[in-house]
Image (cartoon, rainbow, N blue to C red; front, top):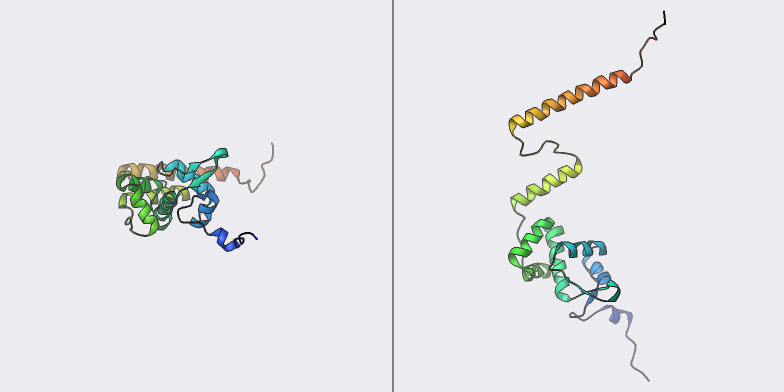
Length: 169
């Protein structure tokens, strides 16, 4: 007789110190695999062990760091740059603690919130006049915009057919 086979439930539970594959980390964090790979390119502190064929194996501290980055970006509204700043100023252990829920980073700085708002407006096509434009510069831009609108109206009038055809003499 041999040893009893492990049930499906036993096989899915890994030891807390076991390495995890990118699939396991992706499922655990609820983040697509391509996002994890992108974060690796943006956060030098995320360094999974890579084996033959490029397979990634994440250590428990890598998973905590990824969990902390996810919490900063998705939970607290930080930008990539803001999360990088937190990592640089406080170190990876601080972000790992955020990932474990032991501490919080606090809200993003006002400067970062303004940056996020400008980025969102640019994506949405809003904010065509820069926020830091001077009053006279803004007035000049608005005058140019008004002139462009009148040019558009003139061009639209050229496209409409004449109500009465002209006869040749």
